Length: 243
Image (tube, rainbow, N blue to C red):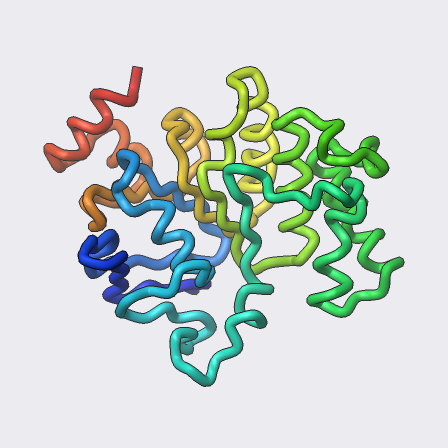
């Protein structure tokens, strides 16, 4: 069953059309990796899905309804999506535990005790439960990103969206974040990941979607798209990115 279905989605910034008639869906429990050159529209697509950018046209179907219809509550819809950004976006004045509870209390109206219990569960999963009292400035980039993942999971989202979660990290910290994401994939979480980590996509993705100039050029299992691509543009891209 599709958790989110995108139909004829387009997005323009002024005269620059960044997304052109994009159609695809993410099934429950599926891990989908979006790949492509910088400027191909991957991050814009992700930001349109969670409505940080409003699409110029098309539909986003969630639970059988187009959430772009005026009757839909955008804030309520967003609570079902977990978003992990390149730059972590943690609250610098809050400690690790509060970063993972404030959204639960304010948005989901959970009690502080319940929110802390849930937060501690996910901080343990990402290996950050020993740092509950630390402020973000005391953490490495990899640790911050693992807290950001725990924060998103604490909202019990239907789908986790990752926008190049390792691109702002030092190379030695990339592995610790990818390890956590592998665990989440193995645990059956529904994940849509914009990434430049081709080996990770090959190992973890159920489906790889290659985008170029705002359109989906090719999609399929990693064994097809990454190892035996059909389109010349995909072959060119992989030749440059796969060592």
